[in-house]
Image 1 (cartoon, helix red, strand yellow):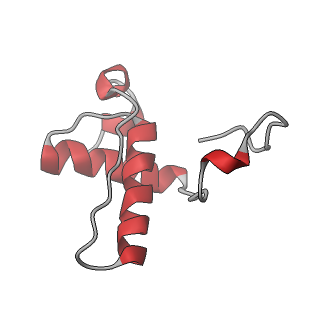
Image 2 (cartoon, rainbow, N blue to C red):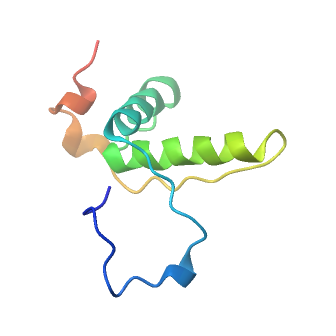
Length: 85
């Protein structure tokens, strides 16, 4: 989720890394969260979960990773995000 460029006012001291997640991964994780966990989030929520999974895989067993769900999925109920079989 981004505009495809780095804004000149971005303070890169505020974060450690950027984890790229594509649209398909974002959709997949948003759908899984809804189906498997009852968490109705939007596309950005799916992206946050996908990034958290990537971090967890990198850190290995026994580590904890937190993902903040930044969007509500209610506005996506009539979109392709939640029109699945």
